[in-house]
Amino acid sequence: MFELTSKLRAFLTIGLVVTPSLAFSAETATANLIDASGKPAGTVRVTDAPKGVLLHIEAKGLTPGWHGIHFHEKGDCAAPKFTSAGAHVHTAKSVIHGVLNDNANDFGDLTNIYAAPDGSASAEIYSTFVSLRGASSRAALLDADGSSVVIHAQADDYKSQPIGGSGARVACGVLKQD
View 1 (cartoon, rainbow, N blue to C red):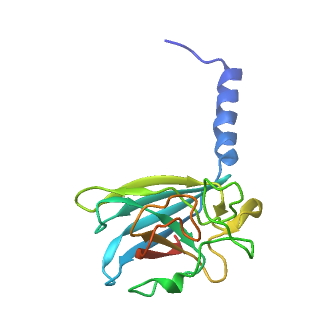
View 2: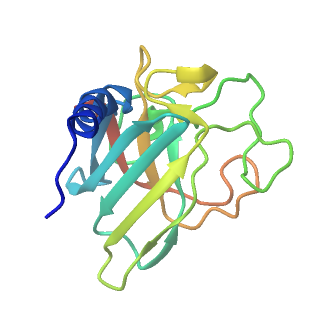
View 3: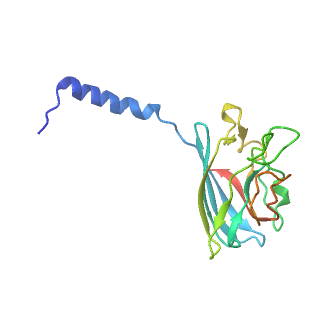
């Protein structure tokens, strides 16, 4: 059996005490998705990370196939069209959409999600464009008027203006701090 010396034991004890204080404390927010008829359609949990946010998406009731998903600028999801959620989250007056566009400045852009034949979608997406509170000059999701997560009827092509051809808004959820 290995026996620890008193110096090694002290070092390990100090290391265990110091290490947790250096860890990033992750704030989270959750959006309860609703469909166009106001029925529950899943959840999105957003976790703040040191250089962006991580989304965990569990959706249901979608048409099978690819769907655009974006952060929208207002925390308002009035059904059936969800236009009350406003445009995508951004910090500039003139907004250019598309993660494949060299001039893009639309911070609401996310990658597509895929709905299985039963209409369910589970995904994790990381975005470096935003933070929950505006850390490091990134757009803030939990600002004065909040924000929402919107799932669209079709896939985002990542370049067409203004929303990548992703079509109608089919699910929406207001982000609220956990």
